[in-house]
Length: 145
Image 1 (cartoon, rainbow, N blue to C red):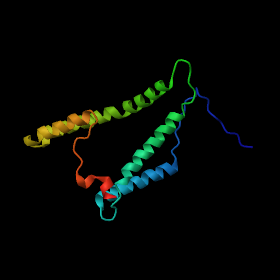
Image 2 (image 1 turned 30 degrees about the vertical axis):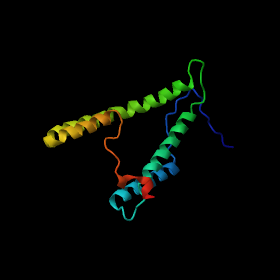
Image 3 (image 1 turned 90 degrees about the vertical axis):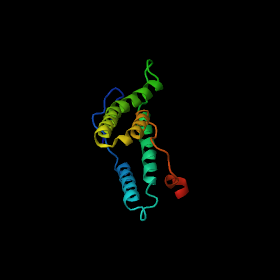
Image 4 (image 1 turned 180 degrees about the vertical axis):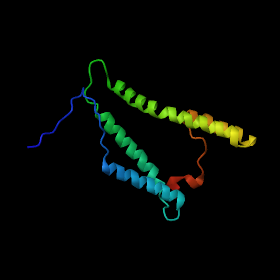
């Protein structure tokens, strides 16, 4: 007879299991985006790999949020959602800001003086998570389909 151990809500998960099926979808998305960039004639719809990443990210976030099923009197669903995003920001934000700072250092060291204003505006938009350039007609995904 096989017994299944179900962890209690108070127990911390020490290991994370990676799902092979989701890793496969992720690999297909990566290959399609790379194909679109390096061999656009052979992979004309490879840009859809980016959309696969968005869908996969949303799915994984829903799984992580749904694992939090036990709420005490002191905490609400908003607390858990806040904690969820806080952990992600704490992990991603330092590296994000480091890359922007490194880019600004490279801007002043490597680029000509004429590029300062344009790149500084792009950096300002990147700091507030805005797109730093306009979409061209060649990048309109829906017209390409």
